[in-house]
Image (cartoon, rainbow, N blue to C red; front, side, top):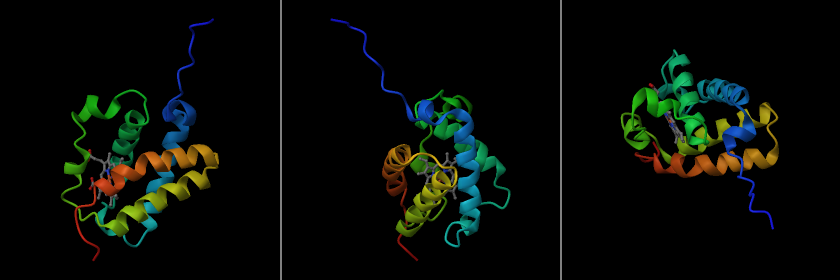
Length: 130
Ligand code: HEM
């Protein structure tokens, strides 16, 4: 009997680094068009795009780009200066779902990514709906 076991591929491997970059860019285009989200994001979104690309690379199982540059993610704490409401968490996930659909990421991988992001999104909620 063979002892060789296939390692389950990571989201980062299934999506690929280039596609992840496209997803992050499309996602923030959607964020900037969203009436609930756009007011809490800076007009110059490019630095946020860069950081999110680095964070999601490691969150999806790729190299630890974000921690290497910025230290421990402490993501909930980093969101404390911004009013993250339940409706904004929904809107954030919805911008991500649309980005994945616009870029024709397959349905199975789309579901896996959204599932993986739902827990942190609701965990970052720190304010009541306005
Ligand atoms: C739940 C809804 C969310 C809202 C409303 C939200 C909003 C924001 C805002 C306003 C910023 C700061 C932009 C700035 O620099 O001025 C930010 C930064 C960031 N967010 Fe979110 N976010 C949400 C969920 C998430 C989730 C689910 C993740 C990843 C799992 C995430 C990852 C990040 C990262 C990596 C940054 C950059 C942190 C840094 O400055 O180093 N966010 N977010």
